[in-house]
Structure formats: structure tokens, C-alpha cells
Length: 287
Image 1 (spheres, helix red, strand yellow):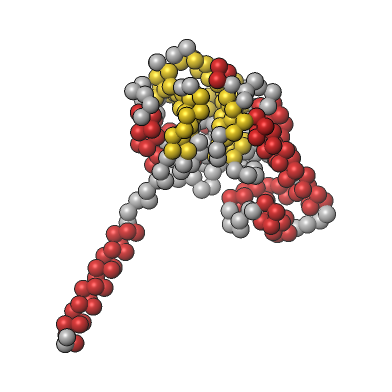
Image 2 (spheres, rainbow, N blue to C red):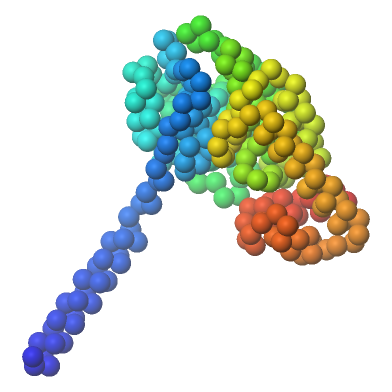
């Protein structure tokens, strides 16, 4: 093969490689696949790509708790349509973060969205530092408690105090003895959004009030469906973390020292939201 032909083939291969790189870099990221799990009777839960969505099916329509990111709208609707032909009529946001309220914009034309007043305010004031553009707030808000009655079923939403943010709603399905905690229970340790009014001190008090409800099943903000004992264990872990960090601060540990201990003992990765949001706020709140 002569040199000229080799050069042409090399140039063609390079062109195709660059074209492929340009194509792949310009493709919109694909949302993660979603999984639909049955919780009880007509109550389902959708996991994946953002916060857990609760789906209550009635003969008058569907009520959702949270709606993940904007890009998850079609996948959420596909999961809903796999169990009912009823339309989504109500969505209750547990809090303002985009992985729980990011789908509001696409649902608002056809459904009514409800949240705490503080959750709405936090969206309007762009309190989430890493939120994508276009997150829309609820049109209906409450301060302490509200309820939706649909198809003979009752869903209560209560603000019980600060924790993950200053506008966390605990959602209660009394007939099914189930609650959705939002990110008042999520993962293995708490993420405190101090810019959004969160509080590590108040978090356990808020969960103590939630634990007084009559329930046996818990849909957390992230992670697998659990039970009342699981929520109590999470509450106790929050208290242990608060006690640990309070002790470190009183020993005179610096913010960098505390951050390293959080990585070693709690798995908080450097550069994570825990490091960006929680550690600086704890240094102030727990001193």
C-alpha cells in the first residue's frame, strides 16, 4: 500500500473518529431507567434517577408524591400508565430540590402541585446552588398541614419542622399506614441543606414527631422502602452524627479536620454536596 493511500485512509479514519466524538458530546444525557414497585394495594413507588416517587391510584385520578427531574416526566408517565388509565391530578412535593420537584414544569399544565410555602419560596429564590434552570414552584401551598381527598382516599401532608431543608413535608397515607418522608430519610446519613434552611439540631425533633403517626411502612426520599424500625434507626444515626460532630467542634477541630473525619467515618466524598452544604453549616450550627 503506497504512502498516499495510507495517508488518505488515516485522514478518513481521523475524520470519522472526530465526527463520532462530536456526535456523542452533543447528545442529551439519557435519564437512568426507572423501576416501579408495588407498596400496598393501590400505592406504588418509582425508584431511579432522583427521589422516590409515590403513586396513589384511585378511580378519580392519580396522586403523585414528587416528580423527579424534568427529563424523567415521560418515563414516570409510562410507569403510571402501566397500572392505570387514570390521569395524574395532584402532585405533592416533599421539598424544593430539583431531583424531587424538577418535573413540576411538565406536570403543571395538567395537574395541581402542592408544597409547603417554604419549598415554594426556596425555588423562587434559587436556593439550590446546583439546580438546573426552569424548576417551577407549586401553585398551592400550606404552612402546617393540608389534605387531598381523591376517589375515597385521603392523603395528608404535614410540615413537622426543619431537617433536610426548612420546608420538608411528611406525606401520610392513613388508610394504608404508610408515610413518604422525602429526604428527611435518604441514603445512609443526612444531607443538611443549610442554604435552604436545614438544621441538624432540629432534624431528630422533626423525625420524632413523624414517628408518632400510625404507620408501618416508609417510602424514603432515596433508597428502598422500609418500615418504622428503619426510620427510627435512621433517626438515631442522625443523632449520633450530630453528637460526633459537636464533640469534634468542641475539641477545637477545624473544618478541614471535620471534613476528613466525615470522609473516613461516614463516607462523605470530597467535593460532594455533603462537603459543600453540610460541613460548613455544621461548623456554625453546632459550635
